[in-house]
Image: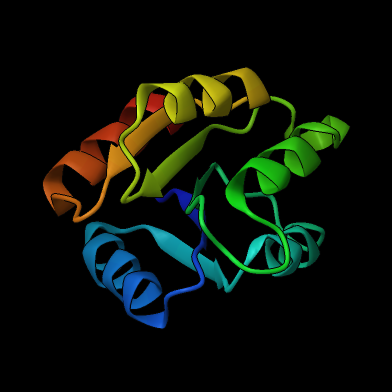
Amino acid sequence: MSLHILAVDDSRTMRDMIRHALTPEGFTVTTADDGMHGIEVLNGIAPDAIITDINMPRMDGFGFIDAVREQEKHRATPILVLTTEAAPELKARARKAGATGWVVKPFDPVKLIKALHMVAG
């Protein structure tokens, strides 16, 4: 089963790493370079899951999660936070905003794939 993933991260390297980890496993990956771009891209697709960074320009991950959850069609779309941050209060804030899970960078591709299958399919 092919899952469609939206990956939102301001780092081109991280977007490429996510794509390289997921594409060989049959995932379709669409990318956006910050939260504002992520919302724009999201309007044209229906991803099975979303991966987002927290620290980004224009709109950070918390604002992005809030904006996604405000859209009826994406209220239940799983959102994994992929970030260098590990503070419990940030994890709690992300959960409260509507994040489904939290993965700390640098990520293990096998664990990321397993997490995506758990939340999306």
